[in-house]
Image 1: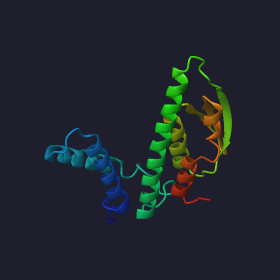
Image 2 (image 1 turned 90 degrees about the vertical axis):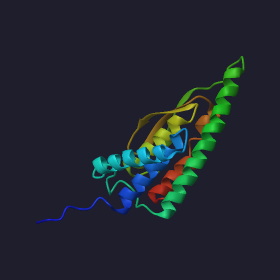
Image 3 (image 1 turned 60 degrees about the vertical axis):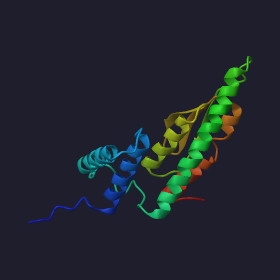
Image 4 (image 1 turned 60 degrees about the horizontal axis):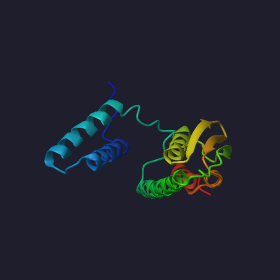
Length: 169
């Protein structure tokens, strides 16, 4: 009789922890009830999706180094989102509306699909830019201004996603 593989492994514990932290961040008050409900919901999500949540060949190995890179990535992404929000607000407030909308092709350094999606969604989250298409070796991005378009080539966000992938320059 073959033993079923335990779902108490490093990957699932990390997923549980991230889900619980996300739950607690979104909770309006930090109470015992919020923690218990978050733990139960996080456990159920891991239990029912542990075999489909991450494909081993697609996801980088979990480690403290990768977690540190991911936290730095989120910090840089938040800074870029705030800067882009200010830029778009200034554009909207100017009567002349100084925009130069353009579609640009951005060469892609990323190899696996998960990281392509992370980067494409990061671009779309940033005001003034939108990922229109993801091809094998490039992204097609719509940018509201020339400066936003220029910021897409070799962006700090893409560099950190590459580091997550383990292919940093």
